[in-house]
Length: 307
Image 1 (cartoon, one colour):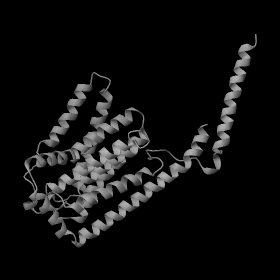
Image 2 (cartoon, helix red, strand yellow; image 1 turned 90 degrees about the vertical axis):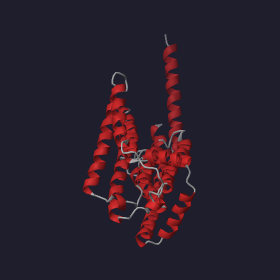
Image 3 (cartoon, helix red, strand yellow; image 1 turned 45 degrees about the vertical axis):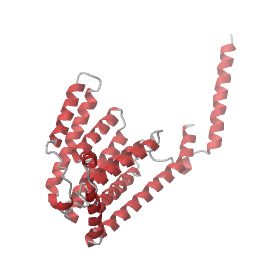
Image 4 (cartoon, rainbow, N blue to C red; image 1 turned 120 degrees about the horizontal axis):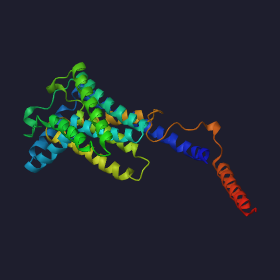
């Protein structure tokens, strides 16, 4: 029966990997086109018009909403969410899936720092930015929240997942700081691509692929896409990034995550397929399995009837 299932799932699994590879290639080409346009300066005037359009329509309530999404999409907050997810996967023994999620997020962090330093694009002019300012204490608050969660869970069954989440969170922060030291980028010249857009898209894409075979797929796809869109739009609305920065972050993040998902030892949807020469035809295998089951039942009945 197991070999029959492998035979039946071989073709859909191969098609799924092919579709993910093709989508990753499309996203990569999109990023290359955006990067060429940014380097050439061909889209600056159009993007300034978009920023002016957003600035003319700012109001107190939308400023608060967009500011909240911008805060949630920050590096420390997404590192915390990723740490919780990784701890949950590791404590459940899903090491391959945890490796996939961790590789996607670490790859997003490394690419964000490297691409910002390479393109060295200035941020939008100050007169296009909103009055919203990210609190300086938000990073410390994230650390305090993790410590509080460990203390609260210490005498419960969630103790080790909380400790694991704290360790992953510390590692993520450490990698972020090391990246800033190894590949420094000036705060005013780190516009392309948007780190908020890149990290949020990478995390959401990873979670969607992890839960792709469950009944939550559609709802998670809609919710995740809405969250990623809200984070990206908030960066443009607040005047902190150009639209091409956000589109570039989305495209490179999805490209990296999908590329990782087709690696056999990281594939969150399924492992390597059974070679074509080793599987039995599905129909014959199912019939043989049913026949064996029927024969075993008849044999058991005869044994029970025998005095």
